[in-house]
Image 1 (cartoon, rainbow, N blue to C red):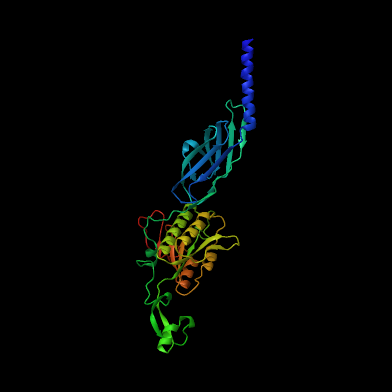
Image 2: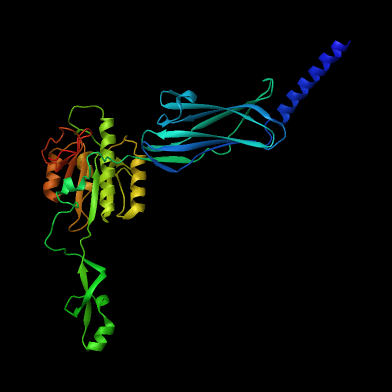
Length: 373
């Protein structure tokens, strides 16, 4: 009799435990994950934090989280597997009542791109494993934009392209003037703008005087990025993906150098945008322009590419004195004609692919210090 009573009590406790987890197992239980940074660069490591919160007294003895992400986000191998174009990351949690548990992963960004947690499967169970419940994730951490790594192993590239110490072609005197640099005043001459008249000095002198401005050496620069790795008539069916990535990194280095010199730069990219034409930025300077351009390079999908003639047509100079730099895996007759017409500069990133022999600078991927044409 006592044995039957004992068995009955055990069964009663088991059924009560199962009932409790069926009714309250998901109450007050939440899961969040997030990246430590919104931006990173190829090769850098960022933190990825998973947090499970249990706001009720009933403990959660076991919870499994399975995340689906890009294979280019490298998690520790013992907790992740890669299948095709997907990485699966698995984690297990045990949370006491009214407690919070966090796990931090160190994730290596192996390739440029824009990444997010694509899917999360969350399963929890009671002490005996008789009840299994699934719950949605409350927060998936937004996106992580991974900038391309700058190609630095060949040193500074603009001096090699433009053949001077600071990446500029020497001129006898700049024709530009800077309205913020005043060198004094001078008598008014026909054609001077009225907004340059120094009215106070003119009143004292009894004649019109204008501000004399200093010349400035600051010019604009357009960087054209070709993503084709061979001409359309080369007989190849597919593009060279490693060469495309190398070319993007060379472009990133040239962009960084130009902005470090204080230039106003725009970027023209040989990939079709929303309107079918190439991707093109406005002129910009400084850190904001660098971040905007690097974000565009990170988002490139390398799917719908512009032909070389279409890219060159979109990169026409906007004014006198603007410097043009074409970063391309190859050169052909259209590049040679463009260079002669615009006096642009050509940096070829493909080894032995300067077919038109018009490169000002050769930047192959495995060069030692770079090789000039």
